[in-house]
Amino acid sequence: MKKRSAIFFLGIIAIMILIAVQMFILKGVWNQKNEMFDLRYRLLSQEAISWLSRRWSVTGFDTANYIISRYSEKIVKDEFDLVRTDTSSEGKKTIILRYVKQVLEKEQDLSEFLSSYFERQGFEKDFNHIIVINQFDLINFDERIPVYENRDLRPGRTTAESVTGMGASLNPTSRILVNRYYFEDNSYRLMFDYFIDFSDKQKMILKETAGSLLLSIMSIIAVAVLFMITYRNLMEEKRLSNLKTDFINNMTHELKTPLSTITVAGRTLEMDQIRTDEKKILETAKLIGKQSVHLNQLINMILEISMWERTQFELDRKKVKIDELMNDITGSFTAGCGNCAELHQKYNFNGAVVDLDIVYFTTLINNLLSNAVKYSEKDPVISIEGFTENDNIHVRVTDNGIGISKNDQKHIFDKFYRASSGNIHKYKGLGLGLYYVKRIADAHGGNVTVSSKPGKGSTFTVTIPVNNDKL
Ligand code: ADP
Image (cartoon, rainbow, N blue to C red; front, top):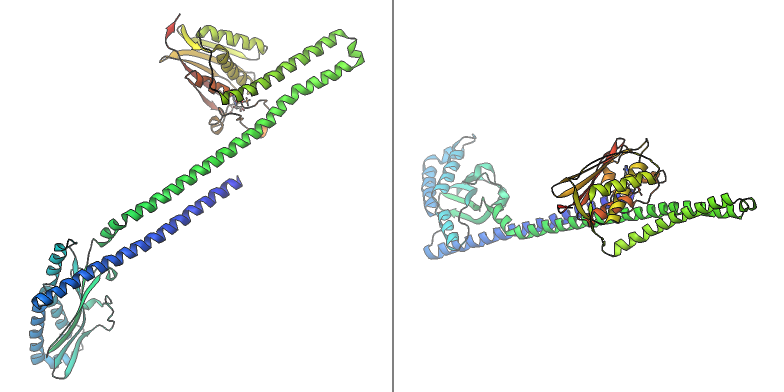
């Protein structure tokens, strides 16, 4: 049990490590795709901007630049002193900055141009733009008044008041810096960054990484499935090997009993006082004979089982009236065991005739009956019901025995399986009786099922197809 959970635990850890490695690799792929995406659109935008300046000698901010220039000229002329002495937070400087932002936002043609350029090149055309003002100064001859200055000039490092644009609230790390602009004339100096931002960027990258993602998930699933299969096989093999060990123990025990009886009987025959008593000799000889037959039966059973394993089950089918056969079998059983059980029989076969191998079918019913007797702690009461339904005959054997737990019910038809293996010698057996029952039922094209409650008793139901022949 300990070894089993250790293997399982190790397997789970290995799968977790695999998942971690896959996630790490995927993260790398994602980052790479992300960078490629940014680079592609940055190069494309710069190509568009240089085409614009070469062809039309414009930047896309020409109208804005003109308006801001006029505005600055007017401020410098009329309100330069007011700006110079401005210290309040909602003062002149804030108003000027807000106006400059508005103009840059509204009077630029770059976004529209880039969008159509992207579309023409076959790329995504829907994006948000963000304009980040880094510096705005008013200039009067050689005097300069800073209206706004962002000290951290690394692209994307912005302060809230300098940002404008539709996507202004978007995550700064997903923005793509297209260009840094610098405008200057006699009355002002303006420096700002122009960014673009694709709201669908994550989705687009996801589409590109879908292949690797799928492969990773599939490889994880494949490894997990492989592990589960290997683990189950391992456990199954272990279970079988335990069953075999139990079987050998049980078989040794079963073979030892008749053997030791024969040994003792042999020694008894050697004794002088026995040799003169003919009655005793006869009794001992009968005992030896009986035990030899038992021994022979055991060995035959084992040989037969191994033959079944190697060859196909060969049935010698004959048409039999099932109710008559059932009466024969139960009659011989009770006589054979010296009326060891109270038997209640109720047959409703409607005279059905079934194609059966009589010997095997008798073994099947006998095994069920002897188990019903064997696994009982009170006086055994067995009820046998038989009926025909849907072209099948059903034989139901119910006992008042010790019953079978839910877990054991799953395995009792397995070869060598014995319930309560901790107490194997309390009820003698080799774990083959029900295995025979199942194989015989299967060979007839039928099946066997069990329902049981520990402490209450068990019911075995055998179903075999009829063919609807009547005598
Ligand atoms: P064996 O009787 O030799 O152990 P079987 O294959 O006949 O082997 O039965 C397998 C196991 O099923 C038994 O060990 C026993 O625990 C359980 N079993 C079978 N029949 C009954 C029954 N009628 N009542 C309770 N337990 C049963």
